[in-house]
Image (cartoon, rainbow, N blue to C red):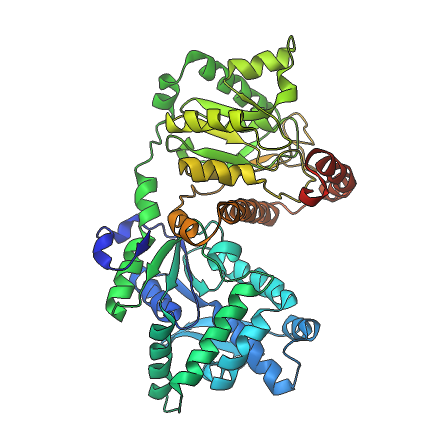
Length: 495
């Protein structure tokens, strides 16, 4: 749904927003992202981080040094040696480059015209994304840019995609330039903004896209006050839904069938024996009919993830080879209502069964990579996840598993065992995307978001416990072996 007026969303209750919230505001040039992001930061007492200013600062430095704006290597070297700092100021944010305040200079017409070329360079974006993630991982921030929700913070508390017609954006940019006492041509601005839209949308790395879980807001016909109000309300939709979740684990256990209680209890004992740590699984709270999407590194992943479950029947999509007649493990999978799936091609029967269970309020455990992957390299996600979500609109919970390949009693320092949970992802923009893209493209967006969420959870894990030499060595050894398995199962194109 595209929101065009504040009344379409409930009255905001600022107490719903957690103190460590991350709010991502994305959109095209001239859509009002910076103004609204600053207003949201002030309203919710959060730190405003203008990521666009970071690219502008690099662009300004490149222009002054005469560096070719299409030379990604030279730009990356310039950035790598720079001290780029953002600090709160009375105007919103102060930007310094190697100790010099450039807050005003980066808003010049010359920088306006050149910044998209700089931002399109893969080498630049990799470094900038890393810097932005470090800035925002502390939480309690509002970030705005082109790829904050899709790349920089795929697990943001709230995502807003703010857009407006080209004509409305030209009018706004024209007024801004005139207020600075500079001359401007509406027709020239129209050409410049259209070209920036093209560059931002078509670049290979981190293009400007609508994340499937973003709240899409069209402010073409809104006043600034209305725009800020509807965005403030949008920030609280996910926290309001999260507050409704049941966190009473004991009641949840009593409500599920006895064989689930037994299985979950056995799995928890196993996880404790191997020293598994759960992170982010607060109250083990899940909505009904959720897809639990887990990266796959070991045969032990299913029971170790099962150790974290307390509520609702859970069905696992598992490869059909595990259901061989007379095999003990196959009987266990059947007893826990698992669904056999054929991994090569689209298994209609398996996905229709999964859709029925999700529609009935049961949960689904899925390993959407299709087979095991090398340590430290989650993804890619197969299209089946997107097909399932488009059919059911089921929310998704991304979970990152670490250490299940190096099990030792009471845990291992060389292979720390974690089940790290992201936030529940709800598909606010799905209908908008389906109106503009093919179902296959939408599935790709969903898969990309899932993979980005795993990678963010992985980086958080490495920040707490750096990747060990054992993990690096084993991951390198697995790389070629698992790549060959992917090619055998899915073909070279999907490996």
